[in-house]
Image (cartoon, rainbow, N blue to C red; front, side):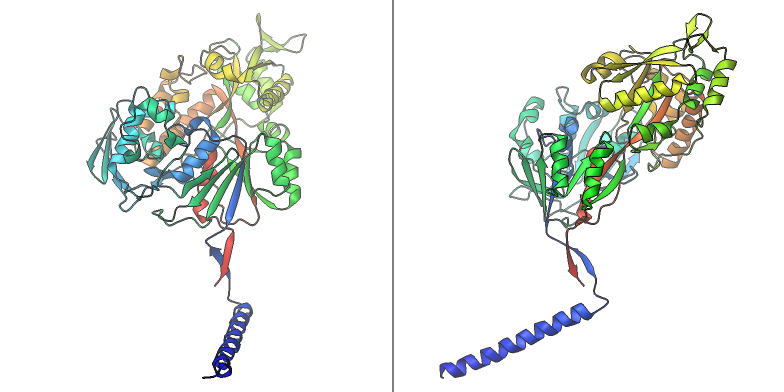
Length: 546
């Protein structure tokens, strides 16, 4: 056969193939029903301002990027839903029996660790993790260590784990979101060895992403293709570390990164830098922590509920949020965000400076010649302590200015942040104090308001005691019935507002700046800053037409 005859059919096939492709493209583009849908692939760059240290869920509590990475690489028995409700994760289901003292978790089958052998996850991993937390020499999160005191964990079989508690503790389930460690890689390590092991630099989990590379300023994650709920859509996540917040903002302005969590302390000018690019969606995310104003109720300035109610009524929290926090704060009644499963509406004193002044007058606090109220030989004057962080000082100064208008003198006392909690607050070395209160993954009010927590190192800083509240808080810890817990929280809240041992100001609002090219973000309460990644499996930067 000649060369000419050989080429002719190939030429015809090429023409036909080209025509087919052209027709196909025409049909796709002309088809009004064709829609762009999320597709796998792409790269996403997150900016942070602190380098990772120990990417291990047991030790990540002191470093936000460690928590970020641990939340992506590891999985817990449960995950927290957007409102804080525990949902199945490595555990498919669970039963709570024995009057709330026994938790039995039934584990997923077919879950693989991210090591080369893709070793199977099982009950031994769960037992290893929680026994490490129970070790008296454990160097990780103190809240986890306290949780596991007196708890016995055992494997019933390779896919069933039982926890036996000394007494019922309803918040226990929410703490089961801690990431599980691979027993087969860490077997035999004591608490000190685990804290310092190379594993914390090269972690292996069962989560949505796996670590594939790191340098001084970059950490690279790739989608876990064996993830038991299906791999996330974005194939590659990069964390880029910046030396300071200003450098991070510069990277946002230059659109060098796709996302960054901006703290409540971000100024209006800094926020406008990001907004003016037009390249980012700004997602407000409410923290579960609360800016709270505590009173030492043993002092004559605060031992009368009428005084505390007047101070609450004489404070315009809306103005405080607008003028100091740049509008980035969510009002609260008793320290539980509106988006939480535990939230119940309550009626707090509405701002009315005139009524607040009259209340103080009726309580016997008359204006002195210096403009400060006094009763007998006691002036309504006190120190308002705060950490020396600029935002906290600004909040305290705003409060002091507002109270001055009703004849109250609050002298702002900034204290070094490193000593403020341990040496000042927990030792009850204050008169009034501003502090950000973090309840953890469960909104249990007990640690802050039960009378048993009034002595150091308890966190009932106001020395509050009410037997009805004590009973409600105790029963709230003993019942695992969610609706019953809500009823008891509502009962607590009513008495708390009436007694006013403290003033809950607001929940700080963070802002997650995310490139407009990324889609699929769903908001969640910020139990920790890493909760911004709760919906990361559904984020996407690539699409396809269907």
